Length: 225
Image (cartoon, rainbow, N blue to C red; front, side, top):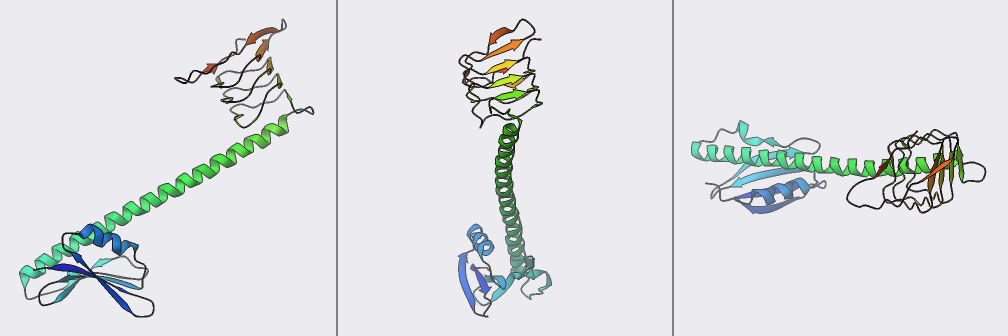
């Protein structure tokens, strides 16, 4: 009968270290195993008279069931150890897969954050390129879907610009004027729009954008032709 498990690791200099684990505490055994970096790892089942190798893993290899080749005279003990080896190996593989998934998600999250910052920086750079000589005028520019959230647009003038789907959320648009611009599906959520307006057509009719600050929903504005 198995009394407990023993985890043995072999270090690069050839020295070995051992640790004992209760047979009902496989989770801690698996965590210790996976967090250990060494040349060789072994898990044994310890009985009253012997130590039986269950799992073995050499450096740069996957863990494997060492009981597959065992032919013990004690069939009941062999069956118990075979089941134990299968259970431990299954937990090792499942836990390792979970760790790999979590690491991948962290990498993707980090990459996504980096790409978002890069994308925003690119928008800022591109928007500044499209500004006129006075740095407050945009004339005849195509800026569909542009993200203006990091740009101060107070006192800016947009003339004949395509701004379909542009994002002006939280942007300072005080005293900004949009002259004959396409603002379909543009987003002005919580933008500062005091005295901002839209001029459409030959009569230069000014329509106030208004202070849209409703936190319960996003506000979209579609210019009337």
